[in-house]
Length: 161
Image 1 (tube, rainbow, N blue to C red):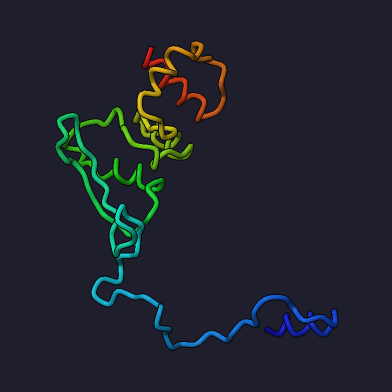
Image 2 (cartoon, rainbow, N blue to C red):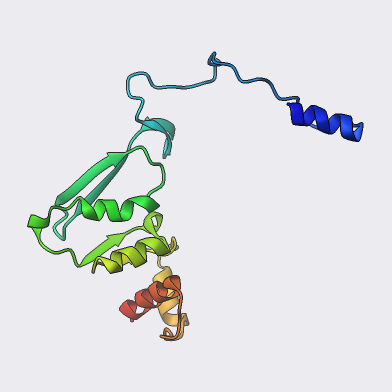
């Protein structure tokens, strides 16, 4: 507020926009807080917005849950490696990890490879039956790409052929 007043005095013009108000300790009618479960948060769902947790599950080839946890993070990008790490060592060595587009990041690819886990993460949403169009139209993948995204794209193309 002091900077705003100084600028108005210096320039001789009124600053555009609403004048900011001093913050108060009294909550406004629109403010939201969950008193019964303060660790959850409001997240976007298929039905709008709801008070939620973000659940993560790791499953084996037979679709049996072998690791799981929940948190209040709305984005899944940071959850790929922690989900893998929830799997107990007694279940054996993890060699591959499959995930959808929400988990794709260069960091997840590189860090999982350092743990000797082959990541198979979708790089983008695809239209229905687009794989057929890609198989018929695309040329064979080039091994000369240097980016993580390029290598993951080539990996998918090679497995389809």
